[in-house]
Image (cartoon, rainbow, N blue to C red; front, side, top):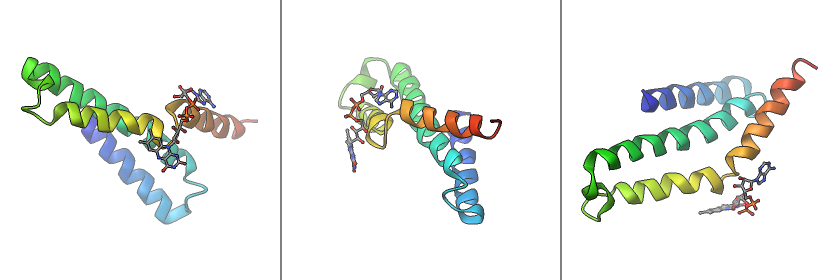
Amino acid sequence: MLIEQSRWKVLNAAGRMDTVGNKVAANEIAMIKVLTPNNCIKVVDTAIQAFGAMGLSQDTALTGYYAYERHLRVADGPDEVHRNAIAKRELAAYA
Ligand SMILES: Cc1cc2nc3c(=O)[nH]c(=O)nc-3n(C[C@H](O)[C@H](O)[C@H](O)COP(=O)(O)OP(=O)(O)OC[C@H]3O[C@@H](n4cnc5c(N)ncnc54)[C@H](O)[C@@H]3O)c2cc1C
């Protein structure tokens, strides 16, 4: 469900970028920058748990995936910065 949710949100953001442009689609873009890495981390974490100790070993690529997804929550701007930007734009619509 988390993978499917991410796919639809990314598809929606890409569609908005194509139809209304990046500036108008800024919130959809910011949302996928938060949602997708967080969802991926949860999926990989579940897989690690399912594999038990093997999931934490070098016999699988799972810990590598975890580290990769984890860095995306910081590298392209911390989640908090994207969340604040989303909130400001959402609230501005009602000001
Ligand atoms: C692998 C990797 C690749 C990177 N690639 C690039 C790149 O190509 N180009 C580039 O410009 N930068 C790049 N960066 C830098 C990245 O953008 C910064 O690390 C990121 O913006 C966080 O800044 P900081 O590390 O100084 O942490 P800080 O700014 O000190 O933030 C630390 C924490 O404080 C909190 N925080 C920070 N600001 C706010 C805020 N406004 N509101 C609420 N909470 C906040 C968050 O929890 C955040 O995680 C990369 C970083 C990594 C790790």
